[in-house]
Image (cartoon, rainbow, N blue to C red):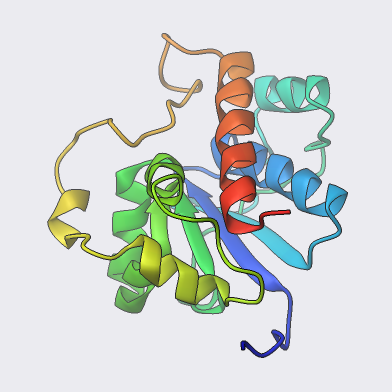
Length: 189
């Protein structure tokens, strides 16, 4: 029914500095898709300057989770990265909003991680062979761009670098749970 993709599916994970949440989430996602032998390329980027390493507490938490972020350097999100993505996953509404400002057509396939999981768990898992962008369009049916406005934290993954109420281990646990649930719906067995 669907043609085979010409290239691996590409997921872009975004956060503010690309030094904590998005590298952690991308590392967890890479591990899960690799364990399943899936052709998925996972990239991460942020809104701030490129070339910064992951924070020391992030590296420590990643090592404890079996992920090596010692060589990670931040990357600034660009229109090219967004254009090449089949799915854009932000850690906060602000990240999705900024992606849509840079490249308006990503609205169809850009979500916060929490929103993506919530919407995916309301419908049947993605059918085998269905393009990821097509499935994201189904997930996003009925969304309103105004939902990205405001400062509600309902869909945010809390940032341990700025939020004293959450630590890096808690963030890894939350991300691992959300990423696992995402993979189960978007790439079902």
